[in-house]
Amino acid sequence: MVKTTIKINEIVKKEREGKEPFWLVDTDQGKMTAWDKKLVDKLEVGKTVEADVKTQGEFKNIRGVTSADVPVETVGSSVKEQVEKPKAKAYSNSSSMYVAYAKDLCIAMVNSGTAHDMSNKQAMDEAIALVKQARDAFE
Image 1: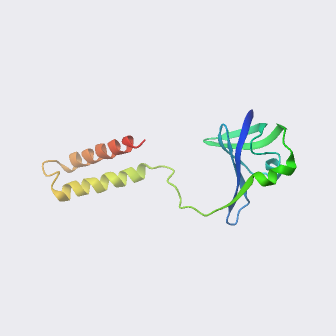
Image 2: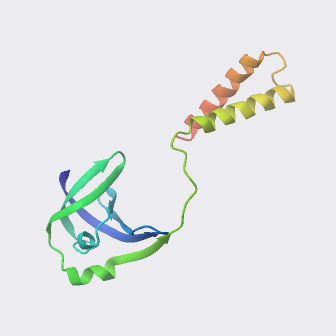
Image 3: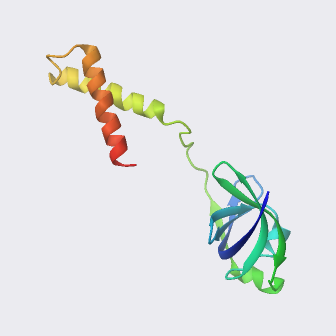
């Protein structure tokens, strides 16, 4: 955990079906989460606080507030409520998606006759190169 000075831009309560709520806190250092209502009560939009922030991968979680010049009675008005609907499972590894694209492209090339002067391996190599080119163009 690292003590970090952050400015609070927005606080949004997220409710998930069948699970405890959490708060998404937009700060001057990016989005962070908070899972404790008492902790969130110490935060106020527009104020700067010194917080204990734990980073896990790409996620930053506010674990504590050590210094805050925040009047607690005004916090409730600065929190937006939002119900989060379940989302489809995101791909954690998109390589299988790229494999499917390359396979589909290779089959289309072979069936259309575009790859008539190529072996199946050469057609697949060409399809892979095209998929990589498209992926790189959008990153």
